[in-house]
Image 1 (cartoon, protein in one colour):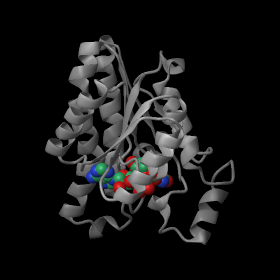
Image 2 (cartoon, rainbow, N blue to C red):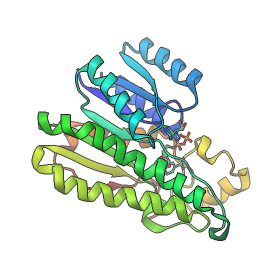
Image 3 (cartoon, rainbow, N blue to C red):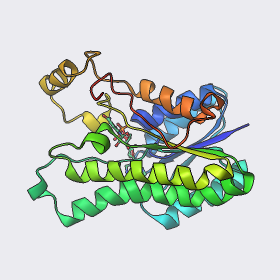
Image 4 (tube, helix red, strand yellow):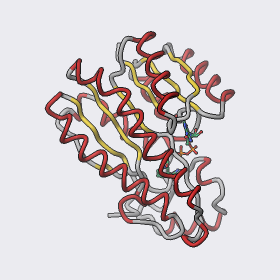
Length: 243
Ligand code: NAD
């Protein structure tokens, strides 16, 4: 049986990924940082689907915690077939209001977190000559967002990391891809007013925001054998918002 580790899996896109992979018969590692109750509920929900899962608290920006998490997972499931670097934070403010601390935290969680997890999983994937990594960026990492300069920079960094790592580890049989979602209905966008959401939907050719399940579907596809010749790519489920 294959094993997937999903960072930031207790809610939103990460939770939808956990359920989608469980339905594809994967063992699932649910990484979380704060929401223990939500992570444990997901663990129970996956058990009801007949899926084995592990719940593990770790801050992806902390390499010590990440390495301990992977050691634990290797001892339980032997190896990890698929890594989904989903954990992320965002913040909306004027560039002139971004503190150095805000900027560093944004890069640390989104980009260094992705680096830490790739670094922890790759030796074992290289040894097995098999594996798939999916990194979660954003449309703003492609096109840039006003009032989200640090978020856009971190997400653009994830795209660069994906493309270069795909070239480096492709010869070892490992695929590395990226999803760059448009605006998706999750807690990350809870600060948007109904009128902001309506405006964003109006700017989207499909006239609505996306769902976490729609992003999870793309991530599962990229992890699957159906995507066996796809690596180093950025796929953007965005309803046509960015074409
Ligand atoms: P979310 O806020 O619901 O989920 C993010 C998850 O990451 C949370 O569970 C959070 O606890 C976890 N997390 C944050 N910091 C962490 C850390 N240091 N270590 C471990 N976990 C941590 O939002 P979401 O929309 O589900 O976001 C998932 C991913 O999708 C993020 O990378 C986000 O940037 C990206 N994304 C979201 C949207 C959107 O519109 N919602 C669009 C594009 C990209």
